[in-house]
Length: 179
Image (tube, rainbow, N blue to C red; front, top):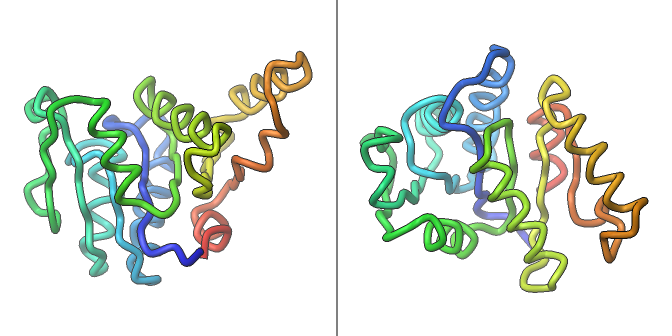
């Protein structure tokens, strides 16, 4: 399947390591260079702002999806191609899923993990077969990867998780794993 749009899940904060924001900006640039539409959470702060601003600066079409409750919290981005306002977080995830052909997960907090695991769960249940990339910038997800391995070795996963989740350490590798 040709990837024409990618959902980017990431933090609304920048994190402690400057490489997180650098990788977010590089991802935005790379998506623009491939003519891929970016779908994301609609914010203008932190990692969200970095990836969206870079994508827009390089000519990428950017669609933000934000729930009404987060309009003030995340300082919705007013400079993107399209901002879709939805009723709640559940509708946000569903809408982002509907608008994307694949997903890339960057460093982030609880919301980012929620989005990652919902995409993985839907994939496991054959609700979709979209590729999911975990961008493990500076080893951010090393402990999570180890925990998923533990879930597997302890018999809690139905399939080999590595068939459903591609781990990359660099934005270039993430894009090349999709296109």
